[in-house]
Image 1 (cartoon, rainbow, N blue to C red):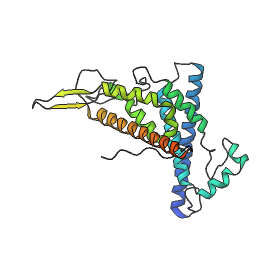
Image 2 (cartoon, helix red, strand yellow; image 1 turned 180 degrees about the vertical axis):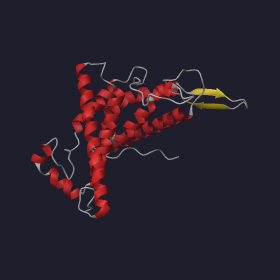
Image 3 (cartoon, rainbow, N blue to C red; image 1 turned 135 degrees about the vertical axis):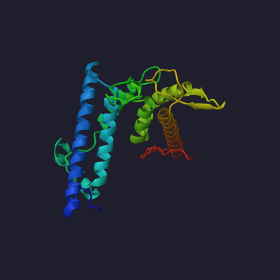
Image 4 (cartoon, rainbow, N blue to C red; image 1 turned 120 degrees about the vertical axis):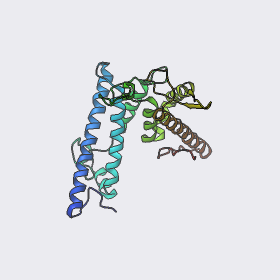
Length: 254
């Protein structure tokens, strides 16, 4: 039964642990509020304020940080807090040693549905807000926007496979875009380079390293997701009992 960040300790370690815990709590609260805000804009049909990229990465932050908080708090304290219904209902009450309630799975499902609902017929998400607003010499402004394969790969890596099951059609739509947008470049030596370039960049030009890396990562994660869910379905059919995978799919062996 580890102490974790929420437990007792002493000296400088305790102070550092408390500071990290406060930072994680605040990050989780900010991400939670951003998810709620973007869902409200989406429900109201306010396209001037709704941004699917902000929603997606706020969701990823919320899930990541809430998972991190649970890894820093001892299981016994989590169990004790979960058993207290009055404490777990409080939005700002202490829960398991940190100032947040249990992760809101309904909110996560709603946010995920909204994110995939914004995927275009071409298999891409809108550009959304730029990641940065200034650029150095030679840095194309198109590089400031999130490349859709990076967003999809991050969702697959962060959310449980079963959470992605309702959205396999959207995943297939995006992987179809990847398959049809491989870029080739002839080298002076007669060889060829094959890869991808961001959809936010002009189509003229050869493949780019960072775009290709994200596209390959997305394709690998998508394949692993389908494999994980297919195996779960086969096992469930053979055993006549539903099996829900609880861990994100691992990368395929190299």
